[in-house]
Structures are given as C-alpha cells and as structure tokens.
Image 1 (cartoon, rainbow, N blue to C red):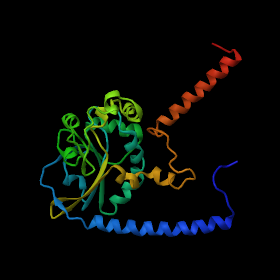
Image 2: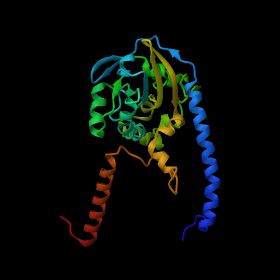
Image 3: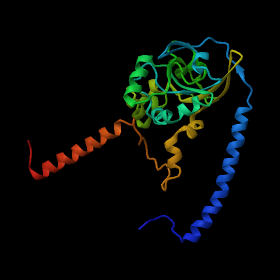
Length: 277
C-alpha cells in the first residue's frame, strides 16, 4: 500500500493545473534570466592562453573553430587524476548529443581540464565521447576562472569559488580524515580528497568579435544544475532525486557492479547447494 497521497483523476487534474501556472511562471522567469545573462558587459581577454588539443597547440581564439561564440565546460580532471570526476562525467554524457547542434548554430563547444591531453584522450576513448576536449596544463586558464586552486590556497584559506571566499578547509574533517562521500568520489578519480578538491566544475561563455575574445559569463556549483541532464529527468520522476549518497558512477561502471552482484548471488547459491569447486 502506498504511503503517498492518492486521489481521483479530477483531484489530480486540479492540482496539476495549479502546478502548471507555477511552471509557466518559472519558465518566464528563466527567460528573463537568460536575457540578463546576455546583457552582462563583455570583458576583453588580453592574456595569451594556450591549450593542447587534438589538432595541436591552440589559443583561446582557436577554440572557436571559425564560430563567433564559445561555450566551455570546466571539467574536473586534474593532472594527478587517473579518471575524470564522476559528476562531471555524468554531465558530459550529454555533450555528444548536443554539441553538434551548437556548432551548427555558430556556437563552438569544448571541455577544458588541467590533465595532460593524453589522459583526456584515453578517458574519452573509455567513455566513448567525441566532443572537443582541451588541456590547459601549465597555463593560468583554470586558475583565472577559479576552477583550479593551489595547495597553498587550500591551506591558507584564500580559495575563491562561485564568487565568494570559501572558509578555510585545511583542518576540516573532510580533508583531514579522508572519509565520507567526498572521499568516495575522490577515490573514483584515483586521488585523495584534498587533491580532488583542487579542481572545481564550472561553465564559461566567450564571444569573438573583430579578432578580440571577450568573456561574457561563468557559472559554478548549483549554477550547473540545468546542464546536468539526468537531474532534469529525475526532477520529473515520481520520487525526484531520491538521493542518500553517491549513487551515480562512470557509466561503464554500472555493468561491472551488476556483474559483481550477480557473481555474489551465484557464490551464495553455490554455497547453499554445496556445489563448491
């Protein structure tokens, strides 16, 4: 027997029509916010950023690939990582489906990370991704856009992220004890919590006009929720996000977990039936 409120079709329809008005208000508000994003002043980029790409060394202007606009996803994949962040990876699973549409609408797209290009290429092959991914290793790009921090910043409490100064974390339980969900996520990347936390997620927008690149917008943390496709679907599922910890994985890890579970069930059945090897 369900514990959720139940009702008649008529009661459901009345409640749904009331909710529809709230959804329409949210949509209109979202449209207004999009216009305000586009109205932000542009900031000229004068620093000569350099990236490693599949096509060789590239400037920020080169990442536009002949288009006038560029969207960058700041993917958490530091030089010490053995694999990309599972959360960023879950977001990136949607990139292959839409980046071709962006690039046919005068908008270039690229993920950018500090890991060496060879690591990015290997992880792309593992994940089956084809979207452009550039390495900013050795440059200031990630630091200037506050998606990478140094160990010194971590220790002295000078970390700036999501447009605010973060509290000092050097002696926090998460970093000291290396336990909890942060440690679980860090382990999937082959790092400890402190190393994992030196990379952050974000998205930035740029425009190229008369040979000059301008920064137009950046968002971080929960500002990325709208880009995380699976959450948009879960928000419409009967139980919503229904989270009790780290439930998502790199998409190729699910089959491995299921295989392990099937093996455990087989071993248990063999034990009960006395059919040991």
